[in-house]
Image (cartoon, rainbow, N blue to C red; front, side, top):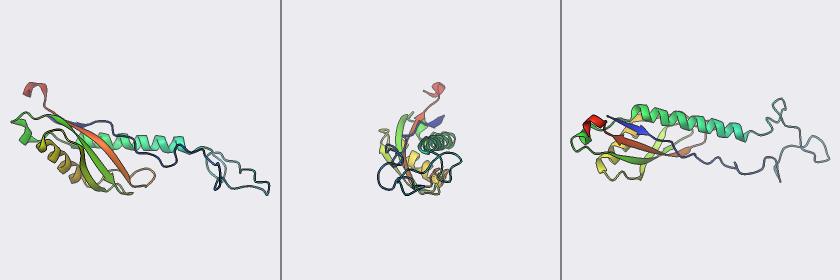
Length: 152
C-alpha cells in the first residue's frame, strides 16, 4: 500500500526569460564609455550567466521535495476497505525557510477521504527543504494513492 508524489510543476524563476544585463540596471560599467564590466567565474561581478545554475538548483530542489513526499506519504488505512484509489494534486506553499505555510487541493481525486488524507499528511511534515534561492515557493504535487495489485 502506498502513495507516491509525481513530478512537481516547475515554479517560475522570476526574470528567467529576460536577457542578462540589458537595458537600464544592467551590469556595472568599468569606465566612462558605458562598456559593460567583464563577467565570468573569476570576475568580481559574478558568473556571466547565472540563470542555468539557478534553474538547475531549482530542478534539483524540486526533485528532492518530491522524493521526500514519495517517502513520507502513506496510503490511508481507512481507504483500504473501500479500495479507494486516486490522484490528489496538492498545492504546497513554502516560505523562504521551507516551512509549509499552506497546503490545499488544487485538483481533487474524486474521493474526499483521499483528498483529506493528502492534506493532513503534507501539513504534518511541517517543513521541507528550503528553496535554493530562499524565495517563497508554491508547488503543485500530484500524490497518487494506489492499492497494491494483490489488494485490488
